[in-house]
Image: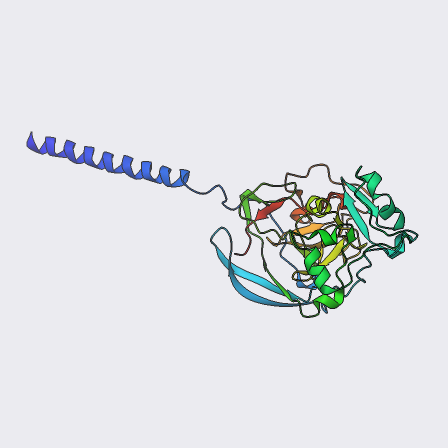
Amino acid sequence: MKIKLFRIQMLAAVLILSLTFFSCTSCSSDDKSDAQASTETTQDVALSNFVSDAVTITIVPCTLSDGSSTDCYEIVTSSTPTDHQIGPWCPTSITDDESAGGIWLENGEVYDVDGAFIQNMATLYNDSNWLMYNDQGEVYVTKTEEDCLNAANPNVGEEYENFCVECLPSYITDVSQSYLIPITPVLQNTATLFSSGPGGPGNSAPSTRGIALNGIEFSAPAPTDNILDAYTLAPFDDAGGHINAHQGYHYHAATGFSTKVSQSDGHAALIGYALDGIGIYELEDGDGNTATDLDDLRGHSDTVRGYHYHVDAAGSNNYINGLKGAYAI
């Protein structure tokens, strides 16, 4: 009888230990982050796609936002494109045509910043305080690097009201930017939205969206409301870029000027990579069609490229809305 009772007690103890083990295993699974790897596929970042005389690229170890360790491309650029001219931005007279100025992005529209645009700003914004030219029709334009820095300040002084802000390439001859991009993208089940722009408010993703094949940054949406609230205008050139003396030349819209890699199947061309290493493609394919199944990040998958992004329309002042993959930290 004692032996039988002992065996029963031992069986009960084993059963309790087993239940505890499986219960703890289940708890561990439930506690895993939603940002675990996705089962979708991607393409690796291809060095051959970059403009070779515009960037310096080396392989370095890096840590990603999901805690994993991998290899990244460190891309160093002078923030000056070699595949297209930059500027102009501000016309000098209200009689100037569109060749004298750049563009402005407003409510999904792309406007030529020509003399007529400057002359019509009071009507466009229904505000008589807009008067960016003198009695001779000459447009007020910043002239020096000091003006550039002061007018780009969030607390811009009243002395720059009704100025067209134009920062010149000569102001950024010593500017260099460095970006880390994972060679092989690591997709996550939970995406990271950017903190600003159509995808936000998000969490800790960096504000930079990615990098063009010519080494120029795809930046967060320009703070156009803040610019206009100060009664200033900081146009983009026809390539969708302008200059910040600290940041260098950078893009806020894809207008088709930078280097692209055409796709043999007629798919929209590759124009750059997001910070998670996933390719960013033009909005329209070779037939002028846009994808209709994009997710909230502006991404989707196909059998050739795997998961990838499509850039937003130029007038939206935006590229993509977030990152599907882990990014270097």
